[in-house]
Amino acid sequence: MTSVVIVGSGFTGFECARNLAKKLRRQDADVDISIISPVDYMLYTPLLPDVAGGLVDARFVAIPLANTLRGVQAIRGRVDGVDFDARTVTYVDPEQRARVLPWDRLVLTPGSVTRLFDVPGLAEHARGLKSTAEALYLRDHVLEQLELADVDDDQGRAAARRTIVVVGASYSGTELAVQLRALADAAAKSMSFAPEDVKFLLLDMADQVMPEVGDKLGAAAQRVLKSRGIEVRLGVTLKEVHAEHVVLSDGSLVRTHTVAWVTGVTGAPLIEQLGLPTEKGRLKVTTELEVPGYPGVFGAGDAAAVPDVTQPGKITPPTAQHATRQGKVLARNVAASLGIGKAKTYKHRNMGLVVDLGPRYAVANPLNVQLSGFPAKVVTRAYHIYAIPRFVNRWAVALAYLTDVFFERSVVSFGLSSSEDARFSASEGIPMPRAD
Ligand SMILES: Cc1cc2nc3c(=O)[nH]c(=O)nc-3n(C[C@H](O)[C@H](O)[C@H](O)COP(=O)(O)OP(=O)(O)OC[C@H]3O[C@@H](n4cnc5c(N)ncnc54)[C@H](O)[C@@H]3O)c2cc1C
Image (cartoon, rainbow, N blue to C red; front, side, top):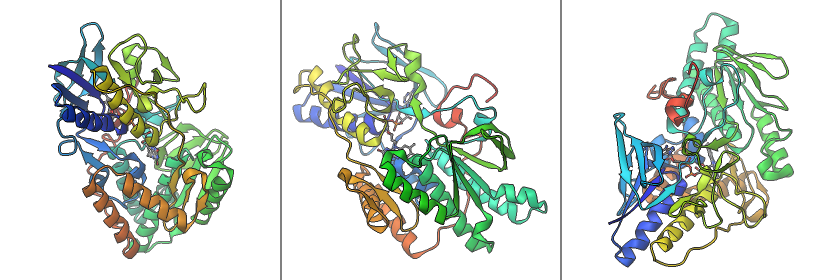
């Protein structure tokens, strides 16, 4: 029997598996589809800031593979090698056993991981926002620090516990800062301290907040951040990270126990391991999402440098919008390689972005229409509820949003994700050659 192996269950792998299974079912084709991933779900990452802010439960943003991918075998494991001659992948299962799987068509969609820089102490003391472990850790850690600050006799240390540094003022870092702010405000109300005692610092090397949404909406976002008590420092990043303070690139020292690093992504480590040609750390593929010179091997999503045919010479940015659409084209082109239908070129124009900026505010530019404030908030929430690929999850997220309209956020930390679980190495699988 012919077998298709899909590596990674993110937006791209999930859409590819779902659409391919549907196409093959219709043709009654004798093809096995497997999807290998370290997790048994597809993570709806755009709502991770909401998880970190305690607004939405982590389960609501995880789409289970088990009952959504009919006709696809989901395998838990992390792929660590591909033999292109023997046509096999090797992977390590959750019990650390090495396993081998043969393939006739291979789809490489392992996504991306947080881009780390050589900043001393970064991997040890900072945490990212790419996984549920990281989002849950940030929520719990912020609350724990606020609770500890409440009973700390040392004024300086209490202030450090109440200082949160977020690095990266693109849309995900900005969304994280506003959601953590809303969580801290809820904690202040429940625990009876002044919300302004909690200081937020949002840093970025760029000279603008959220360059993705343009000057006008970026400026609007910056005003909202200021009104929410989030200090934005541009042209600055981290020079050193320590357990109880950071040193910024301008030489200033900030006492803090919480550093979130959300400065962008790079291709999954697997891509480099494979030794295939790359561009900017992403797998080189054709406009039909095939790896050149490797018949039957496909790639797309954040892990791949997909040529943007709408802007010759450029590659598509790492967004869910592209990843989802590329997953569908992958399904079509893999099916075509099996003799079902015709392959097509990937072509998609950017449809705009929606950015949730916390209570009653958002900015959005759907189809280039610039929106801010409450109308953007409605569009943003409606978009996410529509885009989540499973009814039960949509329902649960919608209810969480409704609950937030009428009630205060719950100020509870379960401690299910420890500081160790949320390390870049443990939660994202980034190899750490040194002390991490
Ligand atoms: C906090 C945050 C907010 C975002 N918000 C938005 C937004 O609002 N709009 C938007 O368009 N985009 C957004 N993005 C970007 C979007 O999440 C990505 O572009 C999208 O997830 C890419 O999909 P993907 O399938 O290529 O990769 P991923 O979603 O990263 O999925 C990769 C999958 O591969 C698995 N994997 C990794 N390595 C291996 C391996 N070796 N073996 C097997 N499996 C492996 C992973 O576990 C995962 O299941 C956001 C991202 C983040 C982190």
